[in-house]
Image (cartoon, rainbow, N blue to C red; front, side, top):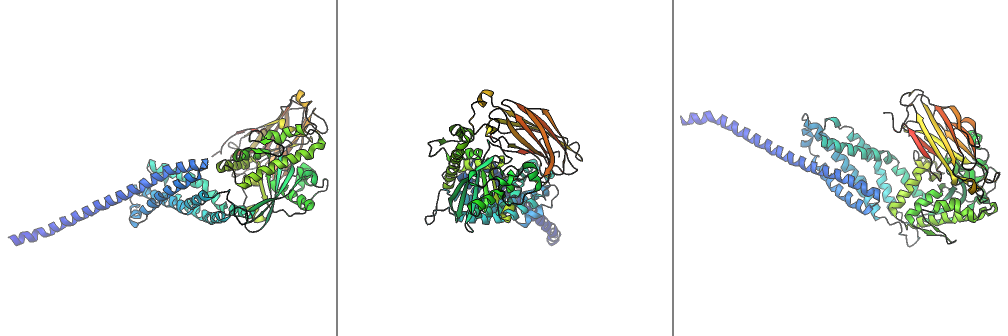
Length: 597
């Protein structure tokens, strides 16, 4: 009886024990997975909050804090990536409902860790260790070793970001819990900003490296434009400094003014006939007006040819700055005292260099003195920058702002180096298509032989029906020029500021409006006439339609001209208006202000 009872209960007892063991195992597994998920979630959410902190520190230029934050971030991303790396996590991703969230967590963890370990952390360490004021004792030049380290990191940027984009594209954001969706959005935004830069990171670092003479000696021509006598790219370029670089050593090799070059003898540079049709022979037979066309490669090629012909020194590239850029840099370097005793500050640099100096040297024959003052000011500021004695965060902001506004431009005679700058504002070219942005360019050129644009205000109002009529959109721009000069002040203008032909009675400005790629000029109408305003031509240049007009303004007068273009069918990005960086910044109104999507 006892034996039969034992035999009858053994299978049932064994089954219960197996079930119990399975239940315990499942419970342990769930607990283990829950703990691991909690650890991963903690690290991922911690990383999210640190990303916001990191962006703030980077924007303020606090690189020591950036390095510390990146170090902490790296620990969190390593832990998060490790927590999602085993096969158990991937099996759990197959569970309906829960799986999409777990997959997103793994993709986010892997992406964040890849970026931190391979890019952010090593870059932060290098940047934090850089001392721009440090010089090599044997040469007195910059220490280029950190730049070599940056080149290695930059070489990894494109593949790392490509992998990140690929991972994030597998996440089904609508199926995620709300907190996770927020992290996905934030990481997506960071990757979207960084990914386009990654492909150009290595080539740009190579350009910087070459510019500092790491691969051999280089000569760079530094041109200074004066916005008081406007041209498309800024202003008359009358002062030049030749910078020689070799293995991190930067020195001033030569200086010259526009009067040191042969005038009315054109340099041999291939330039489109369309440019001559618009800007005349002055484009290539006067170095100071080489900046008349809104294309810095054109201007730089002409400047290079002038310098090599008339000064006898080869030029590897051209940089351009204007007083607006110099004032921005002074905010980082601090005040600078010149040999004249003048103290240049970020507040007075523009007014002194573009107007005040001409009241000190008022006559046309004083031009060499004014140019020399300008050249010394520019060279002194550049020397201060080369010394590394400045506030790094402020300098980064100054240069970034200058590039964005068109006050800082760069061109390299090396085709590969120049192509590395493609798509960047510093290149000083109009976009080759409308897809990323639909650009309309409004450019000014003073033809009064004066420095009167210190007193000129400009405004543009641009509208389009591109969102409603994408197949044949109309782009309209109203351009207004206003002289802020009073009649009383006009009578006291120095000879060098007043018009060479008309004194202070009137001034002439030419305006060139470049439409979108593929468009045609529909109309050019004078709405408000100044002393004399007239439409001169409708043509094409740089692959774009161009409407041009002139305006004579007496002191205190204003004029407005309406220009319209009809676009061809195609894809149009958000509207953007570019133009000459004026002393009094152009007031711009744009509608629509965003993409139609």
